[in-house]
Amino acid sequence: MGKIIFYEEKDFSGNYFECSKDCADLHCNLSCCNSIRVESGCFMIYEKPNYTGNQYYLRKGEYADFHHWTGVNNLVGSCYLIHMEPGSFNMRLYERIEFGGQMRDLKDDCPSVMGRFNIHNIFSCNVTNGNWLFYECPNYRGKMYLIRPGEYKRFSEWGGRSARVGSIRRIMDY
Image 1 (cartoon, rainbow, N blue to C red):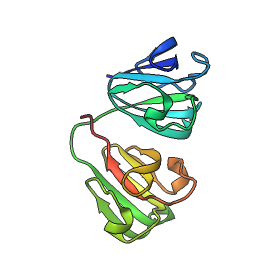
Image 2: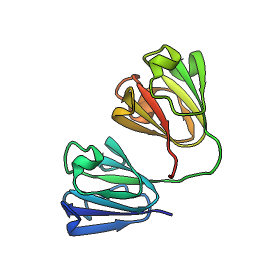
Image 3: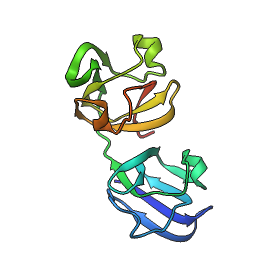
Image 4: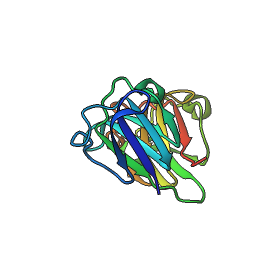
């Protein structure tokens, strides 16, 4: 179970909206979002409705203004509660679309895809266990993308504008 509270003003003031599940359109509840408190669980928040636009991963904690979640503005259009399943993590990464080219297995965090696998781009992947974050840059920086269990035949299916993946991290509730 998770609980997130969105506030229109900085420092947890002004109108607010509490949420304990996925919400495809927050604009009907808030005009903007300048601070967030995650009371439990882990969430991906999205800049636009219907889980589109820039993505930001938030776990339990307080985010007094949008800079604290590395947001570029005070727009939050939707949120997704990340369901945590106990167990192992496993994903297969591919050099080409539709699971083509060389395949690489990943079971733990990877601060540098280039350093570990000697590749710049990941065009498709298959996640069998766990939730993951892809980051555009090494060392868990830059735009991020939530990767849930399932098949991604091309990078556009996880929301990427390019196949560049600089680092990969497991999502663990700690």
